[in-house]
Length: 146
Image (tube, rainbow, N blue to C red):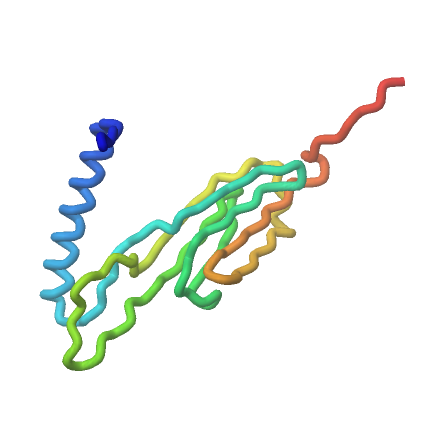
């Protein structure tokens, strides 16, 4: 069976960059002696616009709501947090680590037409949902013709 793949030069460079970052990350975290592996990762995010507002969903499994911070300033929504790697027991050694750990920081530029005072956030089953309503005067409404 023949399998076709799309060639993307930027994908190859991203893969190479990720591998180099992993090598340097492992090298410097082992030598630090602190045992903390603080790297940066980016949670997968969906953003949807409706007539009522903007709805973001971030995949942050393994975190509690206390690990997450949400701020808004100058129509910039910032979501950040930190997921810690669980320590291994004595006599155990990690053979493979594929899950991302460390800090993350996401910033979203919002239009001026949002109602920043009524932003709501909910965390459930590893998904952070943030609802950013549009200001009342920014919502679309139908104009009747007389």
